[in-house]
Length: 172
Image 1 (spheres, rainbow, N blue to C red):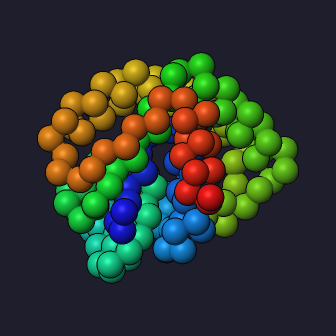
Image 2 (image 1 turned 45 degrees about the vertical axis):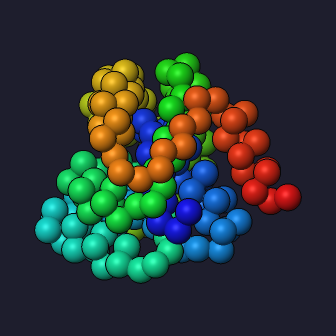
């Protein structure tokens, strides 16, 4: 596993998993959200985004987390392994609610200086919680179909216990 892509529905824990895995493997962790979002939640130009992804993954070893379809062809062709955090809806929804509440209360600074607010997280059309509710099922179906033709090795985790056990075994 030298070039790894971690995918999953929003709030499945891709970044947390990828960060921990990168430390264990001692490889660079690349968070696609950090490349995609500019300050004030402005979306980066798609060509700029693609260029950043290409340059950051033009190396022998890395782990990337994220699901941006506009760079899937770049990443999946370069990847040696794809790890799918394929968790059930209740787990992901719970994580979305807890994470959003925590981030909005602590004013945690995210990529490009962005912060989640209570209003944005819970009371707006841009709510990540609404996004999870509206996209979870379709994204799982889409990943299942897309992954059937991927050339990289696939590792799928359906429970958080499987994921934790995998990381723990790597540390032994």
